[in-house]
Length: 316
Image 1 (cartoon, helix red, strand yellow):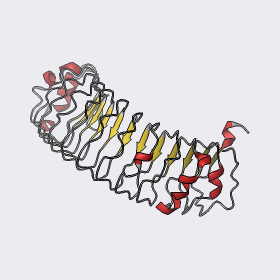
Image 2 (cartoon, rainbow, N blue to C red; image 1 turned 180 degrees about the vertical axis):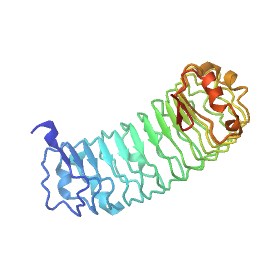
Image 3 (cartoon, one colour; image 1 turned 180 degrees about the horizontal axis):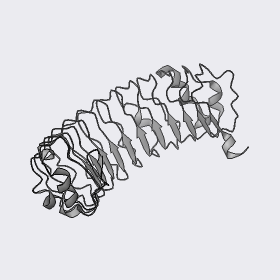
Image 4 (cartoon, rainbow, N blue to C red; image 1 turned 60 degrees about the horizontal axis):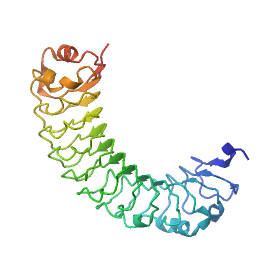
């Protein structure tokens, strides 16, 4: 059997069960996305070559996934996707000794209890759009590169100390009031959009950071950014900023989102962004008092010679 033939894609078939489906025993990938499944076919437990298994967008509840923890033939599974179902707890994934990707986003999970059983090999963990209140049982995941916990009920950033290899941290749409990154020096992308931050301090040691998203908070001052010399994208839109500060040294900045703040004047703009004047290609300043200046677009084009987009307008 060719490698491509070892993949069975049954997505969007609206299946209620797999009774009419043949499951070759040497499958390496099984995609059951967007069906109407409420239980797992026991034949899946015999697929000893399976590496990727997706049950995304079905009607799976906690009881239905319990057999997974006993299917030893699947112990080499590397990717398990249970996104968009009806789970209320973290499934027991202890049997998967080589798991790399685990996705339980868009469920009704209220606690991360159970993650302590997940293999230390895990590189990507997705638990967004649930009802999680605490970052716990994740300390052992030392190989983690992507952590997605957006759209939950988190109030505190914690237990990140062991994530030396973390590259992306997504915590948007929570209730976090203070940044606590425990010196994640290798991280490249951070999202804390739509939280309750009032200060930008806490990112200073994240010197590898390339993208920082902080829109829709209550931040009143730009600070703690001067050490982030690798930053390419900075989004601080929809905050309470009155001036542009602490980004003079950011020579690699390409995208700067400052719209929906309280920035009064463009007079000090050239000095404030002196390091990235030649590099910047996109800037959003709309819905600030300064955007009402009569020479708004002309001034910005003079400051940024290579600008390609100002707000929603493409610059010719």
